[in-house]
Length: 199
Ligand SMILES: C[S@@+](CC[C@H](N)C(=O)[O-])C[C@H]1O[C@@H](n2cnc3c(N)ncnc32)[C@H](O)[C@@H]1O
Image (cartoon, protein in one colour):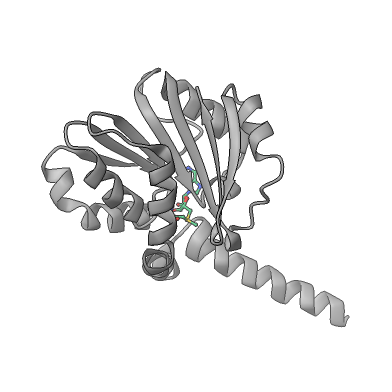
């Protein structure tokens, strides 16, 4: 009986966390977005540094949340382009507000959509990334193959996860290889880890 109540409480907590961070929705989602802004900026800097973005490159971020990674990417591309897809309307709204100037300048486009069906042609992006996102995709392999499809041959992908993301680091490089990528490797820091690979 006691155990059953604990399970129920755990289920409620998981549901709240999902609504705040995993698939942000409503007031809780908006609050989750604000929390992620302050918590994840340094980590996003680190992942984007590993991606070695060049000024003329086209970059895709999946699951951009409140749009902090997009802000950092904008600073790295001057003649290139940054695209983002996130399946939370709340996050698309927050990220659009945060990046309003770059959107107006035509440097950034942020869309509501899902990683399973990206609204881009084959071979479009030089770089792609997802931070603390893949662990909540309905099917990670479908998402990875879809990112592979829209990337250029020779392009680089980075999948970053902070320690609290819930994503284990084991098996990540194998998943990238199964998704069609090569040279998959894992880099670790105090805050989390990042899997890198080449299309
Ligand atoms: C934990 S948040 C991370 C946000 C941000 N990258 C960060 O690190 O602060 C996960 C994000 O992935 C997005 N997401 C979840 N499932 C997705 C999917 N299937 N396709 C695209 N985005 C997704 C969520 O809406 C959310 O914005």
